[in-house]
View: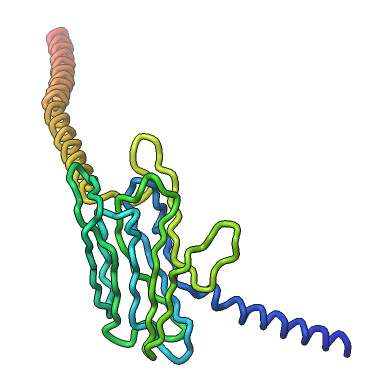
Length: 252
C-alpha cells in the first residue's frame, strides 16, 4: 500500500516537473545548419514552436543586431508565409567584398497566409547570412511572436553567463572559430560560389587539353604495336612457306 502511494506521489512530482519546464524549452531559438564560423557565410534557422493550445502562431519578427550588421541576408521561401525584409541606413558603413555597404537588413518578418503554426507543431524559418562578424563570439536576434488571438510574446531578454535563463530569452547564435587560411565550415557567399565555378571550369578545360595532347601519342603507340605484331605474323608465315617449299623440292 505504502509502495503504491510512493509511486503515485513520484509520478505526480515528475509530471509537475515536466509541466513547469515545458514553457522554458518552447521558446524561439536559432541554430546554424552545420557551423557558423566567424567571418564566414552560414545558413541559420529560426525555430518557432507553438506554446498555446487554443491559438496558432501567425507572425514572427526577428530583429538583426545593428552592432554587427550583415552585408547579405537572404530568407528561404516558406510555403504559406509572406516574407518581408526591412533594411535601414547604417550609422557607420562597412566594407564587404571590396565595396562600401551603407545599409543592412535590420529585420525580417514572416506573416502567415493561412493558419500558421497550429498547436502541437513548430516551424523553421531558414535564412542565409554573412559575412558573420570576426570580433564576436555570438549574435543575439531579438524576436517577437504573435498568436492568432492577438497575444504577443517578446523573446528579447539577453541571457547572461553564469545566471539562470530568463523567462523570455532572445535567440542567440553561437559563432565558432574560423579555420586558418580562410573560411570556416559555413556556406560560401555568392562571390565564393562564382570563384568555385570558375576554378572548376578552368580545371575542366585543363583536363580536356591534357587529354587532347595525350591522345595522339597513345594512338601512335597503339598503331606501332599493331604494325609490329602484323610484321611478326607475316615474317613467321614467310619462314613457314620457305620451309615447306624447300621440303617439296627435296621430295621432288
